[in-house]
Image 1 (cartoon, rainbow, N blue to C red):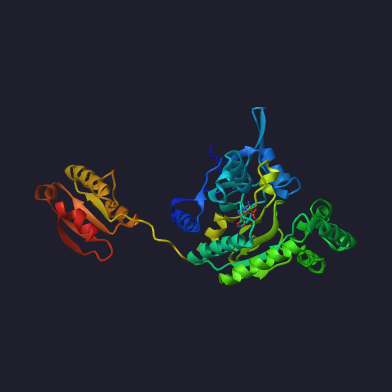
Image 2: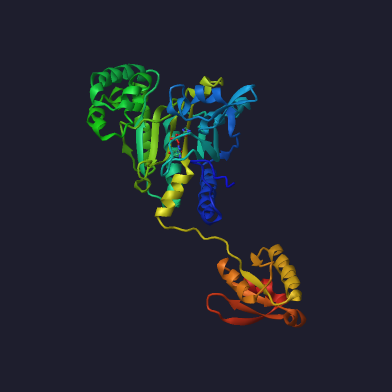
Length: 414
Ligand code: HAM
């Protein structure tokens, strides 16, 4: 019986992996330039971590989390995102004693969403979390870093920026928003109606066309920010201006996770269709404390690697893949042994090469050399072994040039 992969969980095949390697290596390079260091946390955490961290009323926790009982002992969850686990690790290892910290991570996340283009049940994030600095210049620096990263990959995405207030200004606003939404309840879709009581801020995120006029006219948190949040938001914008990062203030930008305060941002791209956010993040100053740590401000983001891969694909940019410099074609048994020996020596010298261990017809071996994209092919048989000479055939021009086998590495390197 053939067993298919799980719905919404994808294979990334060797033919697609160059793009993933490129985004990961550029991320490592750029993040290091800004002082971020990698952390690796488990893909499984206590379910309660996400309920408390991400929020009891979020879709992620109520509908989308893969939760299981581990042999009846503990309730565990596949992580739906990376922030809660990173914060847990930060607290568990007492990292706050070392002052401000900048961490990053990459890995699979799991949400049981309805799969569509750009939305999967297993997806991969590259994320950054910075702890211990409440000042807005950190927000600007981090957003600029993400902008820098996307720019290096040739991706043009629009930065949307908002402030979602804090514990001083948000409660009064939420009450006002709820009142407004209830007054226009009849004009809103079923999903919006479901959310009014539970999570009114998320109603602003609805994309249903008939809801838009109501939501456009809704009271705006940006107009109700307390002095502290207002000053913070202005300073973030000024920081971005100073760094030459362009942004659009989007008063309706809200995020699907409950931990955000003040700065919230997303990078969106037209290449993605309805799942347009390639990355999103924001400040979460109360989260470390909520999860049992010392009061520590924080800000972070995560970008979706599948979505970034879709954008890179739409740009038609194919990062170069390492191809064999030479493919050994064996003419007989003696040639096959020599090919084995020579390929091993070349690889030890750092030169990529290949051969077809099945041997067989030379024509088939040449076809294989073409298929793997080898630059040269080199026929080895008892005659070449005896003379120490062979012909290096350029696979593109078909031109053949003699080469002493002893000089092969130097020749291929040159
Ligand atoms: P998020 O907005 O839920 O934030 O996810 C960040 C990014 O992950 C999204 O912009 C998107 O590119 C990708 N993503 C999310 N869900 C899916 C999915 N089902 N399929 C494919 N890609 C997806 C967070 O997860 C926060 N932890 C970000 C953060 C870090 N905030 C502060 N620190």
